[in-house]
Amino acid sequence: MSAVGRYKTNDDMEVMADINVTPLVDVFLVLLVIFMITAPVIKTAIDMGLPQAETAQADPSQGITIKVLKDGTLWIDNERVSVDAFPTRFQTIWSNLDEQGRRQPVFVAADEGVPYGRVIYVIDELRHIGVVDLGLLTRQGRRR
Image (cartoon, rainbow, N blue to C red; front, side, top):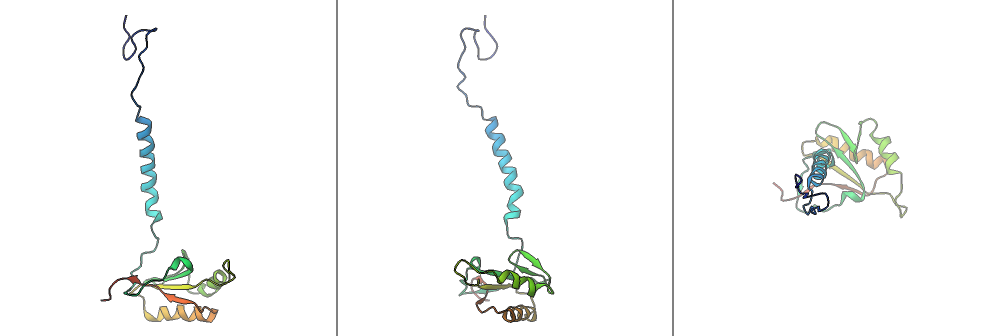
C-alpha cells in the first residue's frame, strides 16, 4: 500500500531533503518593502544647489550647519527655524561645548539662488552671537 506524496508507508518514511524557501522569500520581501519605505527618509531632507569651488574641503559633520534656502527658510542642522527665532535658537544650540570644552565650528550653506543680502544677514547674526570659526560650504567641482 503506498501513500500519496513522499511517504511510502507508515513504517517506511522517506526523508525530505528539499529546502523550504517560502519563509526565506517572505522575509526578503518584507525587508525589501521596509527598505523601499525608509530609503527616501534617509536621504537628506533639504535639496540645495550649492555653488562649486575647486578648493572645497570642509567637513560639516564636525560642526553646526546653517542652511539658507531659496525660499528664505533657515535650517540649523536638520531643524527648520524662522528668521525671527534664528538668533535665539542658534545661540541656544551653539552655547553647548564639545568634549574638549570648545565651541563647535559653524558652516553656512546657501543655495546659489539665495540673495546675497540674506547670506550676509545670517553671517552678521552669527558674528553678533560671537561665532569666530565660520566657514562657507560649497560643492567640489570646477567653477563655471
